[in-house]
Length: 114
Length: 238
Image 1 (cartoon, chains in turn green, yellow):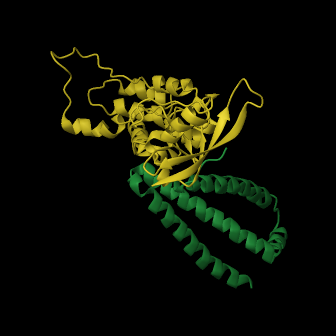
Image 2 (spheres, rainbow over the protein chains, first blue to last red; image 1 turned 180 degrees about the vertical axis):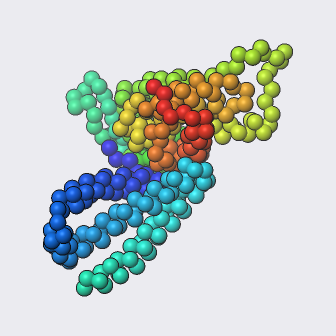
Image 3 (cartoon, helix red, strand yellow; image 1 turned 90 degrees about the horizontal axis):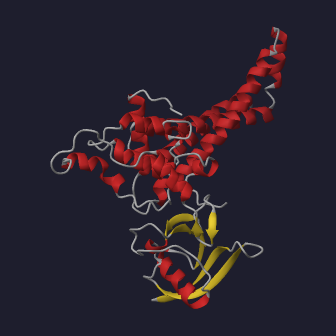
């Protein structure tokens, strides 16, 4: 079924999708970490994580975290009693905040590697 | 100024096979005419089998709610000049279709009944009516303007996925009585709407607010119910 998207429903959709992604990531994260039994295994993993492709992956994961956080803040503020009249500006503000934080932090993050 | 418009209408004729198809009609309409005028012209001049609901034709009865170019709206309140030349019309989403643009609203009205949509006050009635102050009236004024067209509930993604969900329209009706200072059944009403398929299912998606032909900020009202339920310690009934 086709139905027209609008700011609110898009915000809800990206909130949902990033939430599911982060849930799966968290399970994988805890699974991998709980299987490291000694310092050398840890160092080996850390060396493996320096792979540029994985770094880009981490950057995408960071984007998912940021999107989820700001979508969550928006909904929390609205539920707490902030006027629903500003739900759209809040969403746009969230997009700007995500973009700025991601680009600035991503720049410093990649500087460490390359 | 008149212009030709193409009406692309989703038909559903249960006795034909295949039962559903898209029909196109090309008609000339004045810029100040509405989608409903176009539908009436098609029924009168081009295809008498086209079926749709209409009654007042002035945005009061809520009969002609349908999906026009991907958005639920009243056909009698949508001017053709505000739409592109191709106008795509479908029945309201997610309700069973009876014929063409006519949907079975039973489910929608059942949900309305579930929130006890009437004034409950066991105090002995005064000599005349139960007086309401102007300030108290203003608390519920916006929610009273609902015409129950079903645009909101059928635009809600939560309702698409969970047919048990009360939906924005029924919750707005609940608000209308919860915040009516003359009503005394706050607790039993909250008990009924805080269940698994009740008020907590609203994810503030705002699709209902986008489509309401009476421009009611439905999400605002649902959020107020949520805050009231939290204050009163309602976590979830049945």
